[in-house]
Amino acid sequence: MGFTSQDQLINDITVLGQYLKATASKITSPAHTAGGWNSTFGMNGYPNPTTYPAAADLVWHACTEQGGDGTTILGIQHGGNVEVGAVTKAGLSVSALAVAAAGAPWQLKLVDLEGYYRLATTNVTGTGSRVLINTNTFTANAGTDVITYTNDFTTFTKVRFTTTGTLPAGLALNTDYYLIRTGATTATVAASLSLAVAGTFIDITDAGTGTHTLTIQMRNPNGVGCEAAFVVQTAPATGGPNLTASSYTNTAGTAGRAFQGSPTNGAAADAYATRITHSGNAAGRYGPFLPKQGGDTGIRSIESFTWSAGTAYTGSGVVALCVMRPILDIMLPATGALSERDLVNQIMSMPKILDGACLGWLMFSTGATTNNSPLTTTLDFAWGG
Image (cartoon, rainbow, N blue to C red; front, side, top):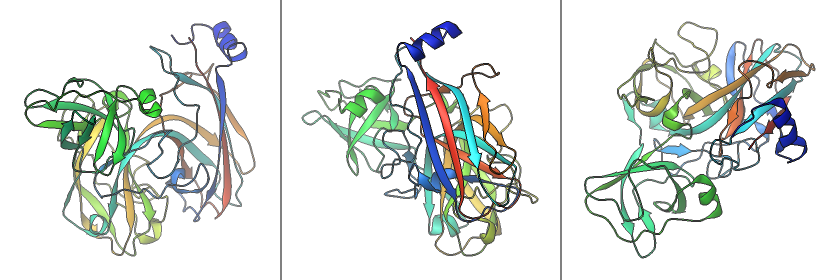
């Protein structure tokens, strides 16, 4: 159960010790241009910055607290797994401080990075449709309990299985599982995230019949509340293309949905490392997220997109199409001024932090934020039951 009263909240914190304070410290680099959003996941500091690694472009790359991006632990550490039944971590308060010669005020948005599709070389510079990979067929070995597929998925990737026949014994339809990566195209399968972290996998006793398929799942069920954004890792040399076509699946399972409007990506000078390319003060720019189709409450997966209008990017840029769930916001009115939000007595109060959440901040600069400016944040969590 969660918290039913402030008395229970105080008891769980002070008597049971079900409380954690999590800190992060980042450095803005390079300088942030005015009116745009940046992702702190790629900034130097603590936690370590990600370079959005992947064995192959266009493949879904899940991110978790425990496994990071498969190479780097990039999310704010919030204490591992506590979920039992309805028990989930809840945010109690948040504070943040930025010290910069210019750029104030700032807005910070805490997000849970579900994962990303990495784009490099021609997937950044090309003008054709990029088809993204969310599923693979697989086979199972009853002797080793290992499943084998085509692409490299990170450990702790959440999946579901379907089949044209009968699934391998030990696996079930309409059930969430977590991969424990054993190689570039192999994994064992765990029944929960905590079991995957412990290395406890399911005993597969036969190969099943027919063709089996694994399909990625978002940490937040059906991607409810999830948004999408293009984030730069390595700046392209020139250009600034438009998003002319796209296809995603919403939380209801409806495929073929398209991001709305005519999002334009920043020209090379405004598409530097950490920048969300479609944010900024110009026609065709939006906030931190691509606008979903009317009535959609989240993103289950993204199937394709096309950058064809405008001017194509050139060079060797690297971009990540990220899927993330926004959790809370805090405003920083001035440099050197500590801001704090009470999340217990405000509405909406005590936002949920799921097991495995890969937490980090998006940062909006009202003015041009100076290079190498420190940003520090503190989050307080508790859990009941």
